[in-house]
Image (cartoon, rainbow, N blue to C red; front, side):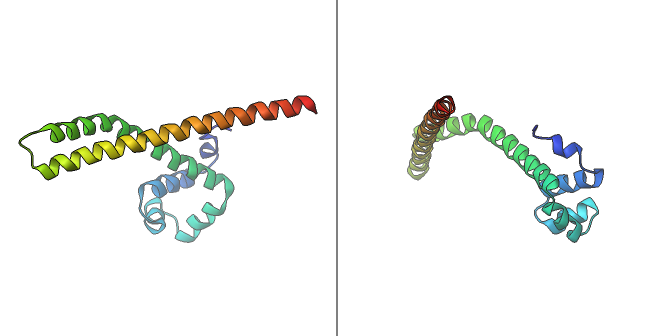
Length: 136
C-alpha cells in the first residue's frame, strides 16, 4: 500500500487534525487548532486508517528533518574543522571541536557497520526463505 493512500480516504476535518497533530506539541493544542474536541481526536487515533495516516505524516516529517540535517552536516563539519585548527581559538573550543568530530566519525562508522550487517542478514534470510520454498 502506498504511504499516503489512507490520507486521501480521510475527511477534510481528519486531514486537518493530522496536520495539527504533526505541528502542535500536544493533542489538546492539535484538537483546538483543527477545530475538534480532544475526545474526537483521541477516538480518531484509535481508528486504524487514521492512525496509519498519522504515522505516515510523522514519518514524512522525520524524513524531511533528516534530509535538512544531512545537508547542514557538511557545513557543521567544516565549522568544527575550522575551530579545531584555528590557532587563535581557545584551547577548550579546539578540544571540544576535535571531540565532536571524533565522536561523530565513530558513531557514523558504527551506523555503517550495523547497516552492512543488517543488509547481509536480510539477504541471507531472503535466500534461505527462497530455498525453503523450493524444497516444499
